[in-house]
Amino acid sequence: MAGIKRQRGEIMKLPSGSLRVRVYAGVDPLTGKRHYLTETIPAGRNAEREAEKVRTRFLNEVDEKRNPRTRATLNQLLDKWLDVADIEPTTRMGYVNKLNKHVRPVLGKLPVGRLDAETLESFYASLRRCRDWCGGKAYVKHRIDGEHTCTATCRPHVCKPLSASSVRQIHWILSGALSRAVRWRWIAVNPAGQAEPPAPPHPDPQPPNPADAARIINESWRDPDWGALVWLAMTTGARRGELCALRWQHLDLAAGVLTLRRSAYLDEHGELQEKDTKTHQQRRVALDPETIEVLRELHGRYVERLAQLDAHADPADYVFSPEPDNSRGYRPDTITQRYGRLAARLGINSHIHALRHYSATELINAGVDVRTVAGRLGHGGGGTTTLRVYAAWLSESDQRAAGTLAARMPPRPVAPTQRMVASSPYQRIAAELREQIAAGRLRPGDRLPGVAELATAYGVSIGTAHRALAVLTAEGMVSVLRGRRATVAGADTRYGTR
Image 1 (cartoon, helix red, strand yellow):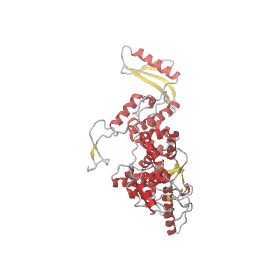
Image 2: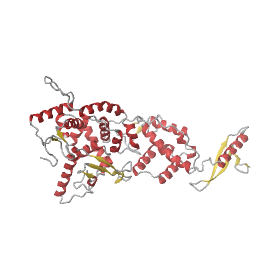
Image 3: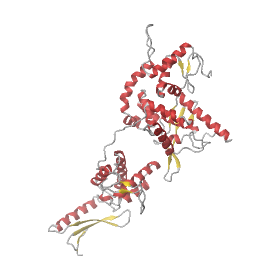
Image 4: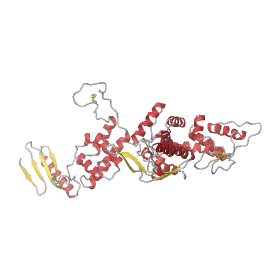
């Protein structure tokens, strides 16, 4: 090949007649080798003039440090980025899974410098059509690699799009890696900043309705220890990992406070580990009297098992455990699978995280302010996340706030000839309890049934039963003390009469 040398850069004539422009751009930081910018100009009458323009452009890019400093591929960038990125173990595993499944097979071998907004947006569009990158071609999806005799498990491929939420997550993962590449001067511009990911999906939490929540509680109570876990998930809104990492030393039943400090997760080897909570902050959650009673009974069963094992209680033992001595916590996926089987038996479309949604929506619908709900759930941003996720319930909560206020009002005077008619389930429960107290069947100091018992007896939700007791408490007919069941007012119940 004949070459026409220049002071900086060179234009080489190839046997085909094309011209190759090459300009030295420094040392590749990844390989340590000399790095060149190259481009080939097709043969033609104006080839030399076009080649000179390309050489000038390359020189300007080198002088202004706008050129890619490396020929590294996206795979190499992702490896380097994951090696230095400071992210949570569970977050890292999620990143690695998405990159290995969706990104590396398609874009991994592409040089970082050739990645642009058009490529990324085409990539996102393809994922939204089919997560398996079939390209519209029909084929049989085999469950076993290599030669084998096909069975019923080898089925024709059916396109299944990747959700908009997952594609957005992939976009932000790539954006983080490419942003680091810009900082390292591997590339001049972050192409992810110019690409447009799918629009964010509208938040759609789907908590069980009160009737289904009551069915879930009743079914879970076939195993009282499992029932206690489901109950606590509903009343506190704790995440599954936080419940798995909960220890007895985190409970102050006398004060009625639960402290969530840690969260359980599975590492890349499938081993159970613990870390900080999702927001890296511990939070204290107040417990209602019924939940305190549930946890006292749970602790009593725990102590009884230890006595049979000739062992002693340890505050560091787990509250929920598959072991008789509570020495090991549950795996989060075990909780998810067991709850899924429970919901399937009842014919309810629900998952364990829906109990967290139930807790949030019931509090909002009861008129509790958003900042308080955010604090119980462990949401950051002073309630911004809570507002975004549960905005659909705010208007409903405004309507129900009127009912909450009405429940706290003094009883409306009724003419002697009129008869009070309960117009809603909680009023019907309150009316029947009021009648029993007036007739003397419930005497001062007697303990009333718990909200769970009332909910089961009347076929209503826990919240409805609790609301009926709140009506009687506001009327002064019932006394509620922390850590104990509601009692008929009129006797000193500080130390309990029964």
